[in-house]
Each structure stands twice: as structure tokens, then as C-alpha cells.
Length: 165
Image (tube, rainbow, N blue to C red; front, side, top):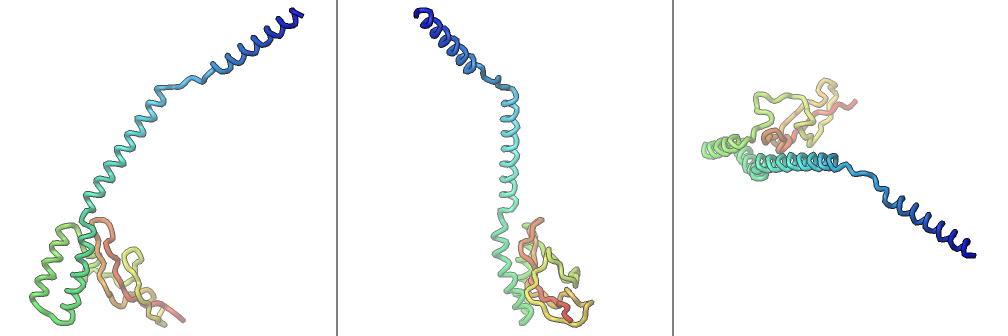
């Protein structure tokens, strides 16, 4: 009986040793590789952070410029109906200030194409026409469009012809 107990103890010891061996076998960690990944992540974080800061500083005046466009619209409307030198002077001075900060008209009067462009124009109304050549032709500009540096600050509101049979 003692032999059976010794055999069981021996088998238990063997199983414990096998379990210990299984537990102690840990995959080797490549610390250098982990370091390289973390360094690359930090570099990407720095780049993203610096880009966000540069975007914030370069477009900081965007909202103020957008708000000033309503004043420009009012002055344009007043100049169209009742020409006044004082209003024109004020209009030109506000435009020059906006130009100083990077706001420009999308299409100045002389350069305005007569064809509707969806990337800079917003069709407010479409008038029906029977002429297929006049399709997507701009009839009138309701509000001028403006760019702030390389972004569209406000799309032009236009009335276009739309071909219908």
C-alpha cells in the first residue's frame, strides 16, 4: 500500500512540475519593439497637436469675419438702392480690412462665370427655361460668396435657370 501511495505522490509531483513548467513558459517580450511603437505614437501625437494648434491660430478670425459679412451685405444693398458716398467709403474700408485678414470675394464682378458651380455657389431658386443651352446659367447673384484663406467662408446665393421640357 505504501508503494501505491508513493506512486500517487510521485505522479502528483510530476503533474505539479508540469504545471509549473507550463506557467513559467512566458513569451519573451521585445522591449525594444515596444519602445519603437511608443516613440512613433508620441511623434504622431506631437505632429497632430502642432497641426491642431496651427489650424486654430490660422483660422482664429474666421467667426468674426463671417459676422462682418452681414454688414457688407447691408451696405451693398443700400448702395444698390440709394447710392451714398459715405456708405461706399464705409463699404470699401470694411472690405479692405477683411482683405487684410485673408477674406476675399469668390468671384469679383469682372471674373464672375455665368455657369453654376456647386463648389462655390448655392442655388436658392431655379427658374424654368425651355432653352437647353441656358441650363445651369446664373440669372442673378443674391448674396456674394467669400473665401477665408483657402476655405469657403460663405457660398454665393444665386438664382439659376433650369432646363425643363
